Image 1: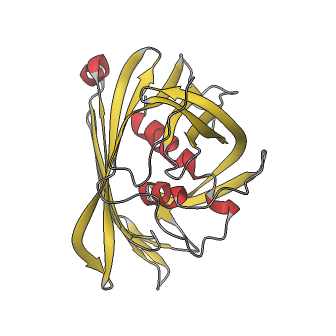
Image 2: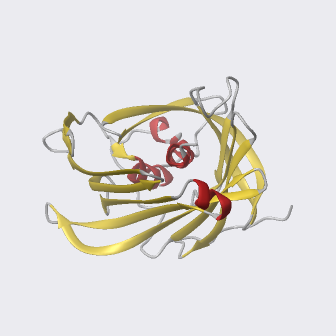
Image 3: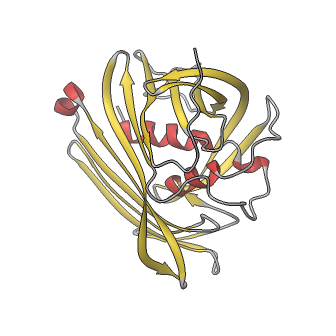
Length: 259
């Protein structure tokens, strides 16, 4: 099971709002330094992995501009850790105002497989430089981690049910495109409580993991934070669920509702 790809898919699937708006600017980030989010990836009733995301301050500047330092770490848990050990770390530095990425780094240890990459985004010259070469940068292209935080800061108040969107992000030495459909609003429960949410349906490709008719759904809080609280997808054997376990240091109150 490519746990790395599943986690990436779940995280990037919250980006559906990006192409509903002009991507020239955002009003302000909906997160702040000190925010910490924790997730559990469950296979049926078993916890297969955990993921932690946090926003830190940094003295590093790019073109003289201050940046947020965003870190995501994922690892397998329980029996899954014994059979297929994963220890992955991703980092991105983004402009504090535009949230465009300057530099991205990943280090993945998945069983016997190891992979690392360092990626520089030069928005002025229109190029992406990674370990394996240089690639064109057209429009607003992100790494998957910076895209997640950028998307949360976009105004989604005018979205319509059934509207489809695309997002471009650089990953694995290529610029990828992800298509997503806005489904509507639902009340959803996770480990942290029950929340009013916006629901999305990202496109997935059938293969070794997903069934031919598999559907991936993701729910994010319908409040100022725009935090993913749950994601669910059917796989060849069973189903996978990503569940928000903890949230700290938020910029805005996290509004729970009664079931």
